[in-house]
Length: 508
Ligand code: MSP
Image (cartoon, rainbow, N blue to C red):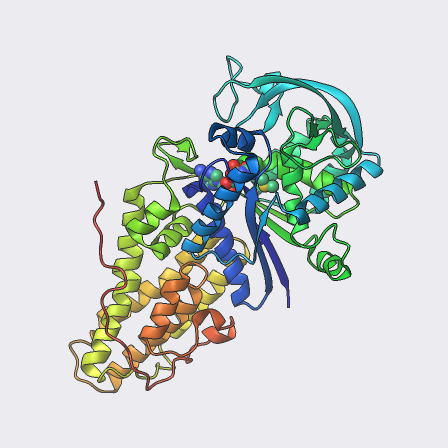
C-alpha cells in the first residue's frame, strides 16, 4: 500500500475563506479521495496561518487581541470546508503548541547547523504579501507588484537564513528530480530564479510580537512565512519527543504532495527545499503549482469587490455542482475566469443533461418495463469496452493530479451510455431480453460512474448508489477491482425520484 500525503497552503485568517481558497482545497480533497479509492493510505492536511503582521492588524482593527481574532476565524475555515464536504484528516493552526515546538525544533536545528546569522536589515515590506521586496521588484510609484498598494520601509535587527549557500544544491536537486515541481513551466520559473542568484533572507522580526519566539533570542519572533512552511512537518510529528510521532514523521516525509497557487512558488520551490536541506531533511517530493481563479481578469481575493464566499455558492447551486465546476472548468496549472454563466453552463451540460438525465431515464424505464427491478448488465455490451478505456484514462489523469482530465474522461462514459439508450430506445420497445440488456448495462455504467465520481461529488455518488439499489457506500469500493464490468447485481429495486440536477437558468 502506498502512502499519499497531500497538503494545501495554510490560509491567512485575515478574513473568512473565499472561492479562491476553496479552489485549492476542493482539488486537494478530490486527489485525497481518489487515493483513498485506490487503497492508498492518505493523509490530507489543511489549516490556517495565524501569525504575522497582516493578522495582527486585522485583529487590531476590530479591537481584539490576535489570538481572540484567530480563534474566531479558524472555525470559519473549518465550517466552510465541512460545508464543501472536504475530507481533511487534520486541520493545523499555527498557534497550536505542537506547531510552536516543531518550528523551534526545525529552526533551532538550522541555527545549530550554522545557516542562520544576525545582521541589520532595512527594506520595503508589503503587509498584504507578508514579505520584503527589492526596489527593482516594485511597480512604478513603489507599489507592491501583487497588491498594487504602497509598500512600507521597515528597518530592524534580525536573523538571516543563509539561502545563498544552497544555490548549487538546489540546482542539483532540480536536475536530479525533474518532476519534483510541476508543471514544467513553473519548475523552469523557479529554477531560473535560483540560477539568477540567491540572497540570504531575513527570517525574524523584533518589530512585532505576534509570532513564534526564536528559541535562542526571545526578543525576536520568526517571520510568518518561516513559521508557516513548517506546518507540513508539524502535522506528521516533527519535533515531537514521542517515539511514535517520530516514527510517523519517518513514515510520511518526504513523500509529500504540496498543492499551491502560483503566487507562492518562491516560498515553496526555493526557500522550503533549502530550509529542509539546511535542517538535514530531504526536500519535499512533489510540489504541484496551480493557477488562479479570476474575476473580471483579476485574481479573486479577499479584496475583490465582488467577494464571493463558498457558502454563497453552495446556497445557490448545491455542494456537488460547485465542487464539480471548480474541478472541471479550471485545469490545475492554468488560470480560469470565474462566472455564474460558467457554473450554470457546466451544470446544465454535464450534470442536468448528461448524468442526471441518464439516472432519471434509466429509473423511469426500469419502472415502466421491468417493474422497478434492475436487470443484469449485458456481458458483451459495447459499453463494457468504453468503461474499461475510461477507467484507464481517468486513473491516469487522477494519478497525474489532473482532475479536469479525469472528469472529462468519465463523462465520455456517461455520454456514450445516453447515446446507446437513444439508439435502442427501450422506452418504445416491449419488455423482454433486449430491453433488460440495455437497461442492465446502463445501470452498470451508473454503478461504475458512481465510484469514479466519488472524488469530485461524494454526495451525488452516494445518492446514485442508493437509488440504483446498491448496498454499502461507493467510497468504500476499491479500484480498479470494483469497476470491472458486470458488478451490478440484478434484482435490486431502482428508485424513481425527482431529477438529481434540475436544469437551471443564469440568475441576473
Ligand atoms: N498563508 C500563506 C500560505 C502559507 S503555506 C505554508 C498564503 N495564504 S493565502 O490565504 O493567501 O492563500 C493562498 C492560497 O490560496 C493560494 O496559494 C491558492 O492556493 C489559494 N488561492 C487564493 N486565491 C486564489 C485564487 N484566486 N485562485 C486560486 N487559488 C487561490 O498565501
